[in-house]
Length: 273
Image 1 (cartoon, rainbow, N blue to C red):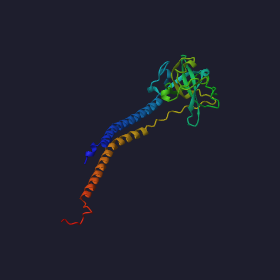
Image 2 (cartoon, rainbow, N blue to C red):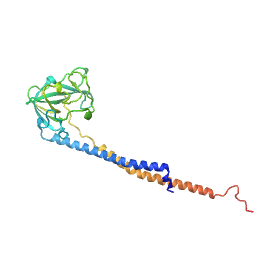
Image 3 (cartoon, one colour):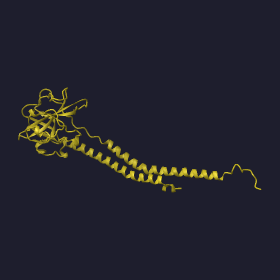
Image 4 (tube, helix red, strand yellow):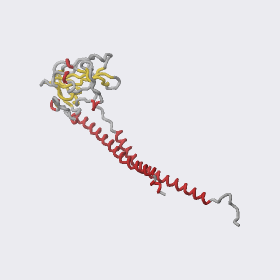
């Protein structure tokens, strides 16, 4: 009664089951690896932000890429702002997600003459997007800052497209290489998200960028378990379908044999000569 497994329909069904099982099994591990990467990123960020502040020059320099291991590392900067070459990064969301505005990017000139792009925070966009917005003034004179070191933004990492033809001193990506022609000083790689300033500035200042929240990885673990459950359900489902097919065929066979054994009503009760 299992000869039906050799039919075209069942051969195709069995082959499909054998193909999807390893695929779903690998998808489960793919989600597990994403879960592990996110957890590792969260641990790296916590560790770097809790570490003692180090001079920014010790972690980056001109034409250098900030390695992922140093992302969000707390750094110390001393110098003065070059407000004449201040920039704003467009299409940036407020901390509460309620509105779109700008990030204020001001070069901080270090003692050796090199400069670091400092993200001083968020401001509202205003009504005229074609002109440089009114930006709260940066502190004057020598300042000491602490902040979080970030790598140069790229389209691949952020999803932000680098648009050409923007109004003067407006940029899409905070990228030291892309803005090097707009700043006279030699820029070091990456940029810094401002955390603290000394002496404290007077007057209104841009809204500081919030510390990064943990990247949720719970869904990835849930998806991994789901894929593995689907993998286990395939052979179980296959066995259930086989047994149901067998029962139906046995029932059909029994019905056919029973009809064959029933007497013909036309000849029922007629005695043999």
